[in-house]
Image (cartoon, rainbow, N blue to C red; front, side):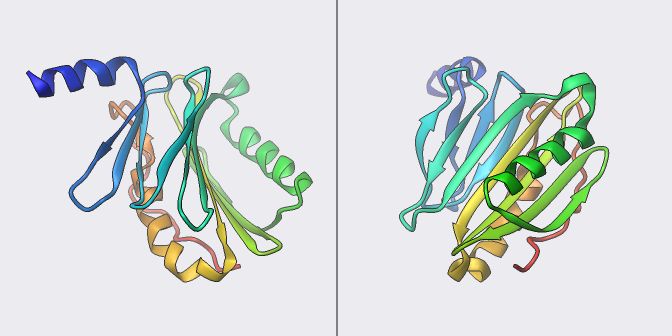
Length: 171
């Protein structure tokens, strides 16, 4: 009964589910995607429109996981626009890879690193995560980023995100 209630609840709300190794699985029913959240991150805010959530760790690292509609299904153009917006916010983008099905880019601003990942979903939308963490913790976060990259995918498997992807680029 307990698991049935959890299943029913997860169909209508985005909830984090704990794994035995401390990672949580975040699933979003509005855009039908999921992603893993590293240990030590706490849910601090869910969006009012149900597109995603913000998580934070004790060291001030912020993780945004969200979905969005892609105008005219132009995934690559959407990513390029997001890179422009991040440049306008002062991020020096030092790495970018954009494909028809996924994209990653990273950069630095002051003492912080930005890593952004997106996967195209089959209904003209996309799922994204952005991780902003201290530059001094670059090595510690590289392993986490790799697992997060692999975990960002459609929740129902309607479109399979590529299984291989680059690790975080050094900044």
